Length: 158
Image 1 (cartoon, one colour):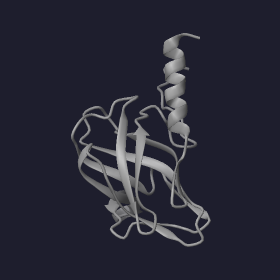
Image 2 (cartoon, helix red, strand yellow; image 1 turned 180 degrees about the horizontal axis):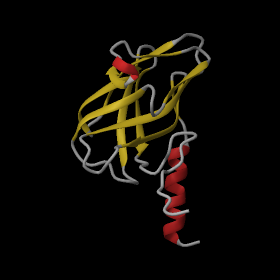
Image 3 (tube, one colour; image 1 turned 180 degrees about the vertical axis):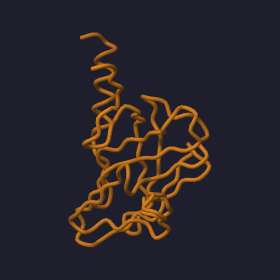
């Protein structure tokens, strides 16, 4: 195994290690933008709470964007899905988890200060009512597909 392969394997493994603070664990975090020219991006993760009481993710911040908000998707007029800010944040149930995922709840980066490129890292501070602030280094993964989604392709001919 070459040095470069070993280095990238160690880096990838370090991102897989959950971040733990005050009973809150951040797992499987990744960030992405839809295109290199996007002015917005998002971060997704699973937040687990091993404490005996509910907690709440109330805000997030990062120097990667002018604004960072907590968002979700809701059905608008005609059933069209749209993103909206969730000002009250997300409850993380005691002894439970809350998944931030594409098409659902997520951390939204608005007015990106730089492109989100494959392999980059974005530092995000998550602020919880009980656990306080937790800083997470989130890898940018533009290749990851949501569960059950396959890349689309064109089929020509018969």
